[in-house]
Length: 462
Image 1 (cartoon, helix red, strand yellow):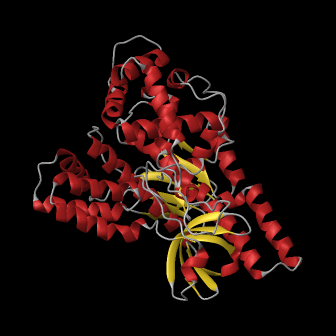
Image 2: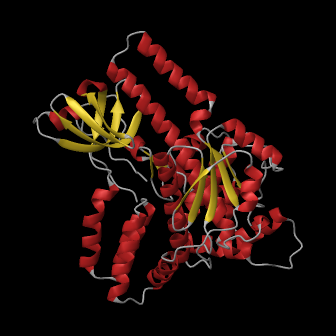
Image 3: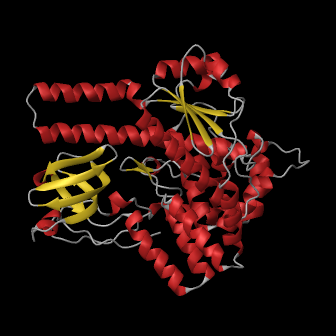
């Protein structure tokens, strides 16, 4: 969804001396976040995943009101219901799903169905929601437990996930909730689009190490040592996701040491709180984003979207998973959004990415490359948003068994041409134009040189 944004400076928000709320915050010391905020007097209260934090008003360059999907939802739902068309109601459901409001989307879907509809996407999504309403049994965990021994893990469950973890109860529940929402969103998304997939028949296994070193040792002992430089990994043989707490990385520990050093040097409480908030939000962006990304890989296999790993090329696997990895303000933001991490990487690629080499998986297989992952995210985002029918046709061609003896790169390119046409130059040009105009919410509203006059130019946002 793209829209113009009226960007208002913080001084304008609090001049009247009354409470105001906002969601995009820009700190004077550097850093920005998408968090709910309330300004009153000389203080700003930010609602963070770990609870409220209060800062002096002078700590902010700007606070931009709005950008609260949860608060927008009631009005959107009412407006869609008032228009009375199946298309309008489905569009509202889809908006909620895209913005991470999974429970709200499912509840609204139930209301739509009760009214009766002949709208195929709605009917498909409703059928998927009914299947998701069933709690899954546990998988056979003994094989995974045996591989993890002698390291001990606690367990926590949701309807479709069992999480083996080594962190606190609240942290484990936060991670479990994100994974469960990804499971539901992934299933509803592809079902509504018309893909022939199944909801989980058994709980998905996810393992969360407290320490990176234990994660690395496990991968090497499990024949996956080639991936020991990753932060998360879906093991197709064990049908399980493995990841580790980002707080065990040297980067995060260095950040904690820097805060402790500034405290000894007499830094202000607001500076220390700012540093701690930025560090924690960055950690959640990594941890929860990886949880969502790897779960999407897991679901691609377990749902039957791509029953065999070689059904899809690497760029498609990674591009699909990256649609689910966006975390904003420490909270999962849904699927298909402008990716706050991949989009900046995309912009640095020179020369401009070429379509055909990417389709043929050129460059993959030589370790992690940020440029290729950014290209993969960008291409899937473009195709999903602008040509969803052709994209689904492409997926169906790849996942359908064929006697074709062509190599996978040739087979992928053939399927792409069959779905999108032979004029790949036009597809490439449209891809570049679309990504060149894409902005994240924080980019669209970022303070400019004339801040804080009051209003900046509207910018496209996703």
